[in-house]
Length: 164
Image 1 (spheres, one colour):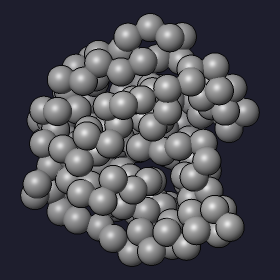
Image 2 (cartoon, helix red, strand yellow; image 1 turned 180 degrees about the horizontal axis):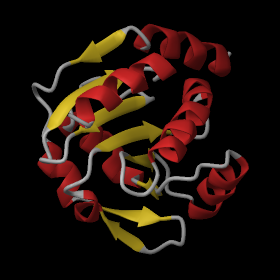
Image 3 (spheres, rainbow, N blue to C red; image 1 turned 90 degrees about the vertical axis):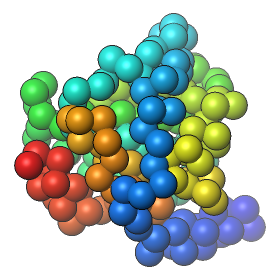
């Protein structure tokens, strides 16, 4: 029953996108989240790079569906291109680390724990649903976001905007 509800909610969210208005990227850059090694990670270290910040959870089926597209994008961009940052809305480092390894998430993954929902809301996600993705330019300003599954065409459009 819960899985069906999550799937239905994910489908509903897939149609929701927004422009950059109402997105406070300073909240993201001010955050200190937890790395897969259990150590603090300052999000300020990502300032100055084009970013795709993806909020997700292990229990979220739509989140699992979009991970391979994010991995492909990150692999295609290489070290100097767009950075993908996965923000897990969880607090169990070991479980998230095992999941990230099993999903071959070859991009930085951090845990937001209790900061996750407030951080997503600061970034324009009033509903607090996942998956949620924010696109941030080199200047640190958001160029857009999407509540719902990001697909290859979403990422292609974001890449064009972020690399201008």
